[in-house]
Image (cartoon, rainbow, N blue to C red; front, side, top):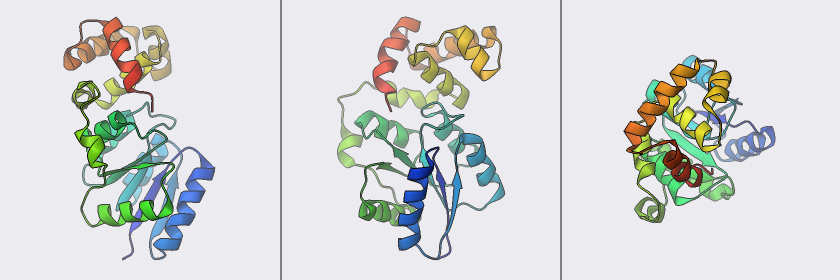
Length: 206
């Protein structure tokens, strides 16, 4: 079938390598590429995308915030997360935020093809062991309570950024950042910023 597949990744070498693999196994599909969150959103708006292969870390996207925004704005588009980390927490959070599948960037071509075929058929592609793992904090599940902007700020805090730095980068006011931080603490059921940083730093190493 003539599917449209979108590869969203800020590394051109990986984008091209993945596109080459897909063109060999899906010769009738149209392959589109984007390099950051905004160009990804533009492609989703302008085209009928049947499946999105999404890198979690691109310009404009902090960790899972890009995935959260895409799932919110385009809930019917299946998303396969492609990440350099295959930690159980990352996989579980991708599933919790509505991704249809997960691929490590070290995946073999055969696995990539199987994943895409399964997701295009309306199924999911996740490691059962990762989804059933209870080794990580349930903070991963609570993250899906956050808005895309709150997720972006959450990841910035985990990187040690101060409210002033976050406000400058996101082009919002410092009081607005403080308001978001208060909401983040409430939604994640955390006491204070120190606890947020302590739990978040291990979680967001993507």
